Length: 388
Picture: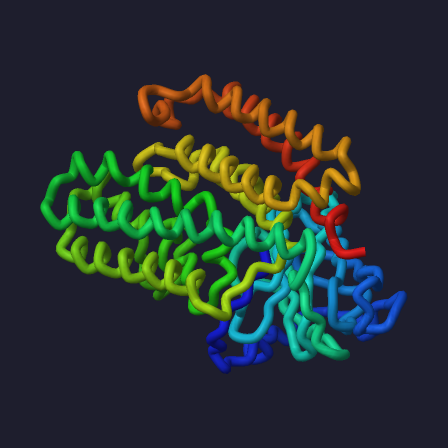
């Protein structure tokens, strides 16, 4: 999901180029001039493998660009477009071997960008330059696209407003040494974050990893902070001497997220909201379904529900555009959400969910099939609602 904020880091993404990338140096075809609001998006094919990330073009005009990514490798991969300061302009995750996915990215400002394929969905990925030329193109300034962006921004703001005090309650329990209270609050606080995780991913300075990095994804020498570092202490090791410092850092990081989405210059690109909806479902399909996310607490089903809630709200914000262009797809998406919700309801207990380690492998596969079916339909929404 593409979001922009008013403060720039001044660090060019070009500094992170990996020399090994194989790129085709041609220009993507445009159907109309760069400053035309009715131009069709340029389409760029991306051939991803375990060792290469080859684009059919490395230049485009300002406005929407469509990337069609095919995974020709043996590992699940991701594709990203980065702006200045490692800001995520658009992403698509969980592209299994042999599959093809589409990403529509609104690149409204001329300048230098980067693309990246991430075989195995880890590390900085296989990077390459991408150049955007032409006049600045404003988006979301009127009509249905602005309404969609405003609607989703209100939702994001409501979630960060709730995230900060919920995290504070979690942290207060840790500082008091009240492990039972901290365990009870852990999945509640995470719910508000998981509903809007693509927002945090769009901010630079590793904000999402600081808040939500799993132990399995730690790189050599990397400091582990965030929810999962505290999760391990609560459920496995007992509270350690650094627990209070980790707790304070977590509060500071979620406040940074809240301040970022409240900043006057922060906006949401409505054409990428559907991409964020798909990204939340990919979060489940890529790792959560196996129980890797909350590996110590087994509160994964809380995260499932939060991801589905966030995805459904994102689609709802752009639903008027979708219904005007492909009402039948909207009905299919509705059915997919209903099917997933019905399955999740089977595992509810009280105000929460059963521990995920009590969910059998056949039951997990049933959930996986329903989420995959939903994701297949949601993945089509972005292309349908992109500016024509």
